[in-house]
Amino acid sequence: MYVALDRGYYEEEGLDVQIIEPTDGATATLVAQQKGTFGISYQEDVTIALTAEDPLPIKAIATIIQHNTSGFVSLADSGIESPADFEGKTYAGWAGAGESAVLEACMTQAGADFSKLNIVVSDGSGFEALGSACDIMWFFEAWDCVMAEMNDVELNYMELRELDSRLDYYTPVIIASDEVLESDPEMVEAFLRATARGYEDTIQDPDGAAEILASYVTDYDVEMLKISQEYLADKFMEDTDVWGVMKDEVWDNYTEFLQEYGVIEETIPASDCYTNEFLEQ
Image 1 (tube, rainbow, N blue to C red):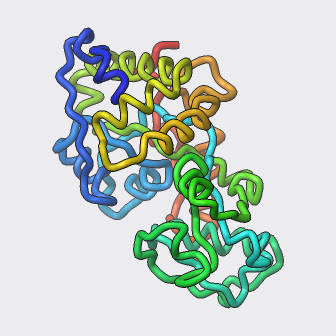
Image 2 (cartoon, one colour; image 1 turned 90 degrees about the vertical axis):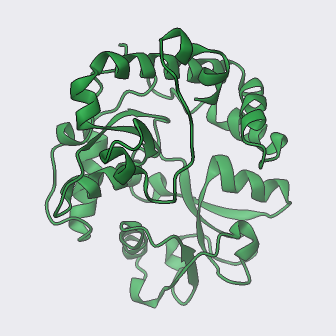
């Protein structure tokens, strides 16, 4: 998105785009209230928002990467190599609605007792907390794992989609409100068209994309961003010829998972959660 902004792709489409970082966890609500035209969310958040007692009028309109690139991590010398080893250990997370469900599912399938896992809220210190404040965390390969590697911290990495195929859900996704989608579909198409160009450029030149990002968001080390983008370059359009496109089966599989573990009371059709109609195919 910063590439599309920097290279004038949004401007070429007649759009004046500003990128801001909202309060953690507030994106879906802000987009539903039209305090943001588009937002970055993830499949779980969208599904929960749509099945809540007071559903939010939002929908996913593109996925940024095609597969879930996250997993559980522990220190390489911890002896924790799979969810079977989680009993009696401490997990630090962000208290997401579906987080406990994922932990319970993975431990149960590995023959471990979920009730014997101690769960605490992370203080945001990342890999530095491993071995002191906790034993296990949930990391994204393109971000947390890169930072750990750059600091010579060796990890055991347990990829979620290898632990349970239903956990290969879309994260992150771009969302918009129903009102925006219904009232100005041409603008939505233009936004996604420009955004897709930004991702296509990033695939071709991840280092250049990282430098653009670093020029806008100065808090991060540019070398870390380059490693991250080099990893993600193969993920943005993995298994597809169309950036952003999503599939019913991915939504249905994870929705059924959330319902099975009590995160949501009833399943919801994939067509209520996402649409590909605004993407160029």
